[in-house]
Length: 225
Image (cartoon, rainbow, N blue to C red; front, top):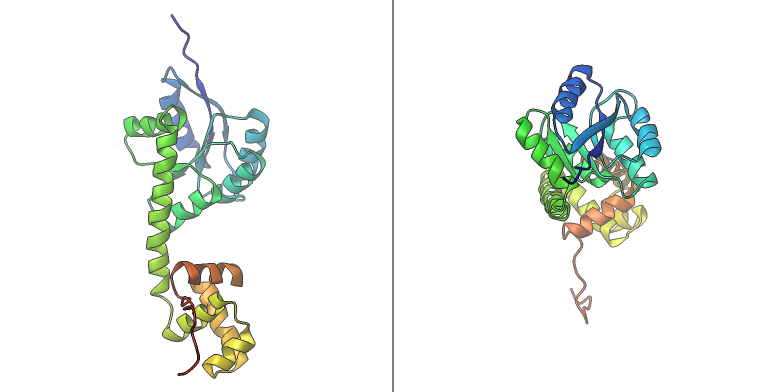
């Protein structure tokens, strides 16, 4: 009889009781094995590099280095790593951030054990490609929905400023074209970055283009008007 190879899992969560419960469930499976546990992102990063697990189950919210940062760092150092984030809720913004950090998917802590195991096996086995395609579809869906929600929080003037940022206009150019003070432009831009949760002007410009806020130039366009 052919021996069943066990997939090696790294379990990362700051709650001892949850880790113990998951360990019990996984230890009962003939094809799954928890080779190590970590209670924070720093330990997870060290263990991932030392052990090269087949799959990492990563809690999002942990003290110190959280799951999002740990996921990002692990993927930077070990691009082939497969990571599923563990979450107590399906908050779209957080899940979007997790997938942008490099996670292949997520597991909700309240799901039934059978579904929990099915999802793990789906990301480990021959269905992994399908899982990745589902993840990309989910990422696009979340991105579109979150973008839409973010945009509704901007004022009309902030949208005007964002549109010009997308065109590559400087603060001085924006002030001139909107007939406002340059300091006012800076204030609007600061509010835009804060509302959209972006770290810099480049991200805001990319968002403006993606949202269609930057008008397409028409060939042969003249300034008659």
